[in-house]
Amino acid sequence: MPPGGSDAYGDEPLPTPVTRAGQEGLAALLARPDKALIALDFDGTLAPIVADPEQARAHPGALPALAALAPKVAAVAVITGRPAAVAVRNGGFAGAPGLERLVVLGHYGAERWDARSGKVTAPDPHPGVHAVRAELPVLLEGTGTWVEDKGRAVAVHTRRAPDPQAAFEALRVPLTALATRHGLIVEPGRMVLELRPPGIDKGVALTGFAREIGAGSVLYGGDDLGDLPAYAAVDSLRADGTPGLLVCSGSDEVTELRKRADLVVNGPEGVVRLLAALANRTD
Image (tube, rainbow, N blue to C red):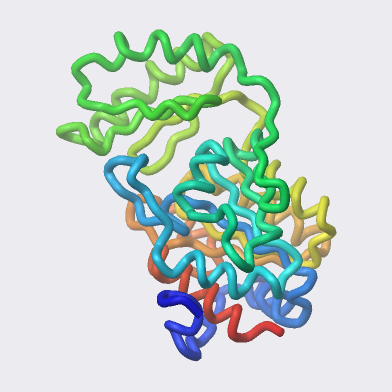
């Protein structure tokens, strides 16, 4: 096993979920790993949050831990707001041994990359994205913010502003008005406001993929507000009889997920340790 993989953590103990539903979800995963779906966010979950999203890279242990676990489960999916190709590049997923069946659902599921083909499939971009892209420079002038162009969405980051939280709050109303005018919605996150098409979220992506593979259990790990729809999707799957485990990659910036999670781990490092422990406990 390469350095940083599951062997690097030895016999890492599996943490115990704090909820009954989470305990049942973990038990179902361990009993039938071949029916389990492991679905994970990228930024803040597999990769540490950084000031410049272009510099975000997966935790050094993420790839080997995923590669150790993936052959033992039904599927591993990365569900991210980033373009699928960017997540693949920043995660180092292309051609990685053990991840031949990995699927990356980018732009909240609007794009899909399959390791088997190495190709991204996606519908045409929403015209409103082009329109807001053209108007943002004037609206954001002097705010100290930075715009990330995701192709099918644009994200306004306030982390570099003199007062990131104040800039975030001040921009919510005007950005929402701009998005609404062009048929888009605003998705708030950790010091970021993303303008993107409606009707697409991580919950829709997760539910669709879980049904596609006939998942017998689902683990979802995330860290931000954009992961709440995926949490809700796991709750719905549980109600329909599919056990699930909600994992929060711990964040002091976003408390909503911590309150909803069955299990809170210490950021991407904790996620890697959890994946390694699962790889060591499944056959």
